[in-house]
Image (cartoon, rainbow, N blue to C red):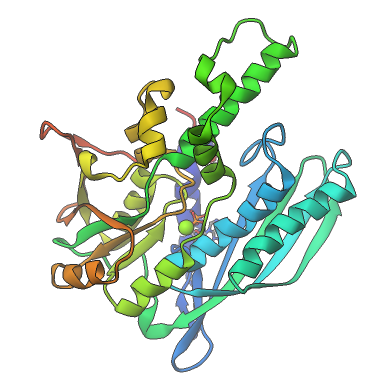
Length: 349
Ligand code: ADP
Ligand code: MG
């Protein structure tokens, strides 16, 4: 079977079925944001790893090394946040091409360390080798009380669906970076065909805000921990692949469906203002864009009041339903199926 037919998640499912062996201390194996392994009667260690590859996850034409370091840490800490945990340690393995200088690698680590320092997390090791393309592998280790760990699999029909912060900024920021890059390509005589809107050429504070959310996302560690401590959430995931895909993961693991109200999806004022320049794709970015690293979680009816009492920036966007269908309802009340459209490393449609 071709990988393009199986898709990334089909492949992971196969690996998961093959690796059913568990020890008595494995609380959560493959299938969640991080694995959880018992380290005492009351606590689990959380472990997660993520790869960032040049020309797949980042483009060095418009990504600075400091931001790249920051983001490499952020995407891993975000997975610890999604379990309700506290990050403690990281390891970094780098494949470094000859075109990159020692100062640039140092810049990468300055960005990496800045975020780690803010999250009181310590770099304890890694590995370094030369390679054709720049690749970054980060492993993060954290912990959480066993009774507080939040899985993807706990959502039940009737639960309310919440997200933290706002969605779609990162995808819009990426689009703006790509437009600028195409622009400078024109200026350098590489292409004479592509024309981009004037406003993008000049940039603005709004553009910078969106670009910053793409290059230096903030992992919602503190919010994740508060949600976990409150005991309000029945399931949680971080939005790395996009709302449509990450909601799909929660629904699949919980064996439920969901109804999302498109109108309720929180958009930043910067995204709303810039949306016109980006073919009015704000809602599409929010649904399918990914890399916002906000938290998506479900809350049973009787704990909704409590979640609001935490005073976190959360928005209710829908309901968990029986059956397995995920739908999005527009302003006019029209319902359509929401398919997971986030990035799949193998599927090409
Ligand atoms: P996230 O988007 O939260 O980083 P992923 O979609 O990358 O999560 O992974 C989903 C689950 O599949 C996780 O439990 C992860 O550890 C597991 N996983 C992904 N790739 C592999 C692999 N090659 N081998 C074993 N487990 C994997
Ligand atoms: Mg995740």
